[in-house]
Length: 148
Image 1 (tube, rainbow, N blue to C red):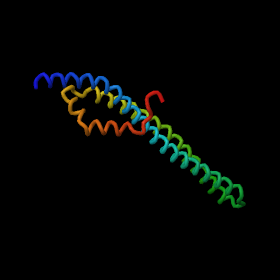
Image 2 (image 1 turned 90 degrees about the horizontal axis):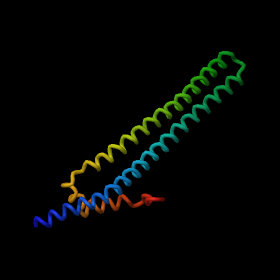
Image 3 (image 1 turned 30 degrees about the vertical axis):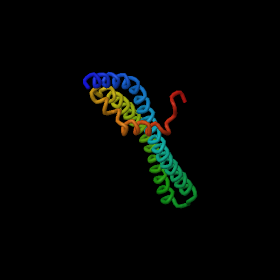
Image 4 (image 1 turned 180 degrees about the horizontal axis):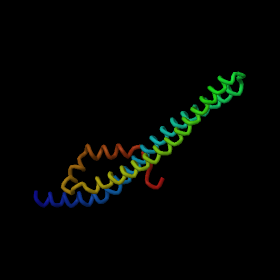
């Protein structure tokens, strides 16, 4: 049994050397997909809010121009200014949050790779259980193939 265990450990080290780049690629693709979707959803939401604020500013400007009442015109110009300011804030918030998303993506990628690199070789046999192997195969479903 001692020789079989030693051979098994060495075999797992070899397998790990083959699997590690594949797992790293899966991690990178998975993170890239998640961050892309978060960015896409957030950008769409903020764009809709910014466009709504722009629309409200135009409405207020049109109402200010259409009235003969100077007090109402001043009130509508004030509303226009507020909506323009909100639109500017949405634009600024979008840029700041996108920068934060990029920072988090970079940090997550590097921590994920460091975590894979830090798995001790004595834990490698546990990674080869049928359950873990199947979960790896399942996670690969739907991801684009390398080179695509």
